[in-house]
Length: 293
Length: 279
Image (cartoon, rainbow over all chains, first blue to last red; front, side, top):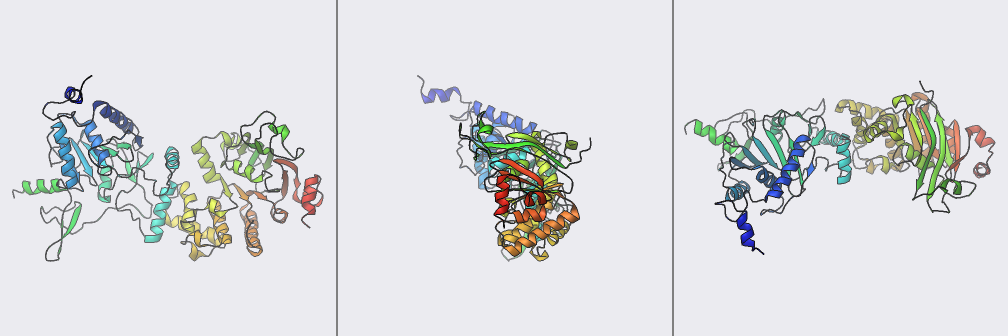
């Protein structure tokens, strides 16, 4: 009978402590990858998977982490974003977990990354072919707001019965004069499935359409993965007379890098004035470096 | 083949329970029960057949538990029927049984071709979304994608059903029972269905509101020519609305014919009892 140490030792990848490469065991990775393959084959369809206990509390990106670690290889370069920033606590901790258990290099420049794990943003620079963006998803079911029963939402998806999602938008227009979804705007994928894009701002929704890269979504608590493969049509649901639109930053400029036409955070300065900076910190850094500052 | 009916129902029946081969013989008006003495199953209705002609209104009358509501719910496919077939002129030219339709096709039939108004408006409406939103659901089902168009149609329907125009953006939970019922009527008519199924539409409403709802249904009959099946235990309602009437007891049709004929000269003892107790 072998000891725990001996069992662990057999699976250790050199230099990364007593963990398997990428923390998860190989059978778990295989199971997650199989779910992902199914997700890619059925764009927008939610695939159940056996979400594992992670050394992070559920609700803090365990779905995204499991997807990232399952597709990770020694040749990958990883970037982790939290609300656009590489410096967020959540991003730091996830990046540390990935590097400590796999040893792969990390970057803050989305152009150098092969896998980007993100919470609530899509980088400003469009994904290139072969690049993977992994979303951390709190609520994978776009119909949950109109139907609490999982059994019923599954039937609604099976029959592409999305009229109630539209009723929800209609009610919004009637009550507020416009569609009020600020984040996680529901989209139709390949004309078939309604999908929740995780709480990204409207600004990022058009980037989902006909992308060169691949979008993978992992919901650890809800035990679902789904995907938008490259070159897939993604259309936000809207009305002919109340069309989808993105946030406007017209006339605004990033205080740090001078960029216009990017998604910006509003910051209040010491003297009470309002200023704007790029939400995508990696993009902002690359712009200031390029300008030689 | 172009059917001269809009809805044909053939041998419709519904059984609850495990069932046995003797269920049909052991139930019905002769036995005076709808419960099978052999296996204990309930035969809620059986052998219900009729043709509904364009613009025609068929009444189904009978006491509580006679199977009339179950028959209607089976027709609308809220319930899975045990026996029988049904054909709609608008579904594959009436050549395919609607009970054999796949789920997406069923949804299409329920969304575009038939409407069922429930006795309890809470079943047909979502009381927590606006009256307009309830109507919108039917329109969005058939892919209307313009808010202005939805509001115009909803406004027209609510006017027709005498719901004040300025209540369109209020939730039906705050409406009276009669008003909820009228919103439900507006909702089921939203897509101009070819067949309207009305289940005890006026039961539980006070007499003056009843009269208003009945007037409305008569207007719809005359102006829009929608074919209807009206289920009621109230012979007054049936007399007012239906040209033809079927009397049901213990899950079977015991008598059918022109409404005047059934009411003036009832043949079956139960129909006689029903008519006698009316006056």
